[in-house]
Length: 144
Image (cartoon, rainbow, N blue to C red; front, side, top):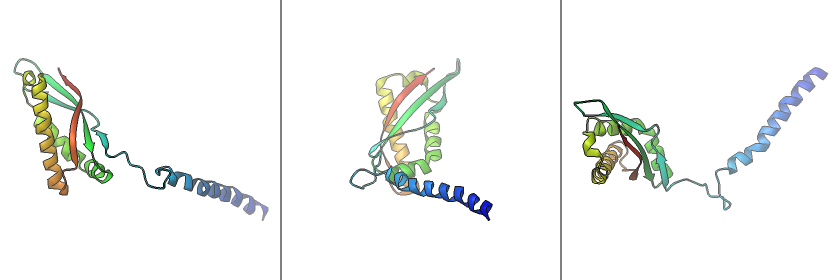
Protein backbone atom coordinates (compact mmCIF):
# COMPACT_ATOMS: atom_id res chain seq x y z
CA UNK A 1 0.00 0.00 0.00
CA UNK A 2 2.88 2.30 0.78
CA UNK A 3 4.46 1.79 -2.64
CA UNK A 4 1.32 2.91 -4.52
CA UNK A 5 1.08 6.04 -2.36
CA UNK A 6 4.70 6.97 -2.94
CA UNK A 7 4.30 6.42 -6.70
CA UNK A 8 1.29 8.74 -6.72
CA UNK A 9 3.11 11.54 -4.91
CA UNK A 10 5.68 12.31 -7.66
CA UNK A 11 2.90 12.28 -10.26
CA UNK A 12 0.72 14.57 -8.15
CA UNK A 13 3.69 16.82 -7.44
CA UNK A 14 4.56 17.01 -11.14
CA UNK A 15 0.94 17.80 -12.02
CA UNK A 16 0.78 20.52 -9.34
CA UNK A 17 4.00 22.08 -10.61
CA UNK A 18 2.78 22.07 -14.19
CA UNK A 19 -0.57 23.56 -13.25
CA UNK A 20 1.12 26.11 -11.04
CA UNK A 21 3.11 27.43 -13.98
CA UNK A 22 0.17 27.45 -16.42
CA UNK A 23 -1.01 30.96 -15.42
CA UNK A 24 2.52 32.26 -15.97
CA UNK A 25 2.67 30.76 -19.44
CA UNK A 26 -0.78 32.10 -20.30
CA UNK A 27 0.15 35.61 -19.18
CA UNK A 28 3.45 35.65 -21.08
CA UNK A 29 1.78 36.95 -24.26
CA UNK A 30 -0.18 39.72 -22.51
CA UNK A 31 0.52 43.31 -21.61
CA UNK A 32 -0.12 44.72 -18.14
CA UNK A 33 -3.68 45.73 -19.04
CA UNK A 34 -4.52 42.16 -20.02
CA UNK A 35 -4.53 42.75 -23.79
CA UNK A 36 -2.53 40.31 -25.88
CA UNK A 37 0.67 41.67 -27.39
CA UNK A 38 1.42 41.33 -31.07
CA UNK A 39 4.55 42.19 -32.98
CA UNK A 40 2.32 43.68 -35.70
CA UNK A 41 2.28 46.10 -37.28
CA UNK A 42 5.85 45.10 -37.88
CA UNK A 43 8.28 43.18 -40.04
CA UNK A 44 8.39 39.54 -41.12
CA UNK A 45 11.60 38.11 -42.53
CA UNK A 46 11.42 35.78 -45.50
CA UNK A 47 13.69 32.90 -44.45
CA UNK A 48 15.86 31.57 -45.94
CA UNK A 49 16.97 34.28 -48.38
CA UNK A 50 15.85 33.87 -51.98
CA UNK A 51 18.67 32.76 -54.30
CA UNK A 52 18.13 32.60 -58.07
CA UNK A 53 20.18 32.13 -61.20
CA UNK A 54 20.56 35.22 -63.37
CA UNK A 55 20.86 35.32 -67.13
CA UNK A 56 24.45 35.62 -68.30
CA UNK A 57 25.71 33.89 -71.43
CA UNK A 58 29.39 34.15 -70.33
CA UNK A 59 29.28 32.73 -66.80
CA UNK A 60 26.89 31.67 -64.08
CA UNK A 61 25.55 34.55 -61.97
CA UNK A 62 23.32 34.54 -58.93
CA UNK A 63 21.13 36.92 -56.98
CA UNK A 64 20.83 36.48 -53.21
CA UNK A 65 17.94 38.50 -51.87
CA UNK A 66 16.92 38.89 -48.23
CA UNK A 67 13.44 40.37 -47.91
CA UNK A 68 11.36 41.73 -45.06
CA UNK A 69 7.59 42.14 -45.41
CA UNK A 70 5.84 44.93 -43.51
CA UNK A 71 2.66 43.46 -42.02
CA UNK A 72 -0.21 45.34 -40.38
CA UNK A 73 -1.92 42.59 -38.34
CA UNK A 74 -1.29 39.24 -36.71
CA UNK A 75 -3.96 37.65 -38.92
CA UNK A 76 -2.16 38.92 -42.04
CA UNK A 77 1.08 37.43 -40.71
CA UNK A 78 -0.64 34.09 -40.21
CA UNK A 79 -2.00 34.16 -43.78
CA UNK A 80 1.44 35.01 -45.14
CA UNK A 81 3.01 32.17 -43.18
CA UNK A 82 0.38 29.78 -44.54
CA UNK A 83 1.00 30.88 -48.14
CA UNK A 84 4.78 31.39 -47.91
CA UNK A 85 5.53 28.54 -50.37
CA UNK A 86 3.44 30.30 -53.04
CA UNK A 87 5.04 33.65 -52.25
CA UNK A 88 8.56 32.21 -52.47
CA UNK A 89 7.66 30.49 -55.75
CA UNK A 90 6.42 33.79 -57.17
CA UNK A 91 9.60 35.60 -56.08
CA UNK A 92 11.81 32.92 -57.65
CA UNK A 93 9.79 33.02 -60.87
CA UNK A 94 9.96 36.81 -61.09
CA UNK A 95 13.63 37.13 -60.22
CA UNK A 96 15.17 34.15 -61.97
CA UNK A 97 16.69 34.66 -65.40
CA UNK A 98 16.99 38.43 -65.15
CA UNK A 99 20.04 40.25 -66.43
CA UNK A 100 22.32 40.84 -63.44
CA UNK A 101 23.87 43.91 -65.06
CA UNK A 102 20.48 45.60 -65.03
CA UNK A 103 19.89 44.93 -61.34
CA UNK A 104 22.86 46.83 -59.94
CA UNK A 105 21.41 50.36 -60.12
CA UNK A 106 19.31 51.85 -57.34
CA UNK A 107 16.55 52.68 -59.83
CA UNK A 108 16.42 49.07 -61.01
CA UNK A 109 16.16 47.81 -57.42
CA UNK A 110 13.37 50.29 -56.67
CA UNK A 111 11.48 49.18 -59.78
CA UNK A 112 12.02 45.55 -58.82
CA UNK A 113 10.65 46.25 -55.33
CA UNK A 114 7.49 47.78 -56.81
CA UNK A 115 7.04 44.88 -59.24
CA UNK A 116 7.64 42.28 -56.55
CA UNK A 117 5.24 43.90 -54.09
CA UNK A 118 2.53 44.09 -56.73
CA UNK A 119 3.00 40.43 -57.67
CA UNK A 120 3.02 39.21 -54.05
CA UNK A 121 -0.05 41.23 -53.15
CA UNK A 122 -1.80 39.73 -56.19
CA UNK A 123 -0.96 36.21 -54.99
CA UNK A 124 -2.35 37.01 -51.54
CA UNK A 125 -5.52 38.53 -53.01
CA UNK A 126 -6.08 35.40 -55.09
CA UNK A 127 -5.51 33.11 -52.12
CA UNK A 128 -7.09 35.05 -49.27
CA UNK A 129 -9.03 38.03 -50.61
CA UNK A 130 -6.61 40.35 -48.77
CA UNK A 131 -3.31 41.83 -50.00
CA UNK A 132 -1.77 41.22 -46.51
CA UNK A 133 1.66 42.69 -47.39
CA UNK A 134 1.89 46.46 -46.98
CA UNK A 135 5.50 46.92 -48.12
CA UNK A 136 8.66 44.99 -48.82
CA UNK A 137 12.23 45.88 -47.99
CA UNK A 138 15.44 44.39 -49.30
CA UNK A 139 17.85 43.78 -46.43
CA UNK A 140 20.47 42.03 -48.61
CA UNK A 141 20.80 42.32 -52.36
CA UNK A 142 23.86 40.52 -53.69
CA UNK A 143 24.59 39.91 -57.37
CA UNK A 144 27.52 37.57 -58.01
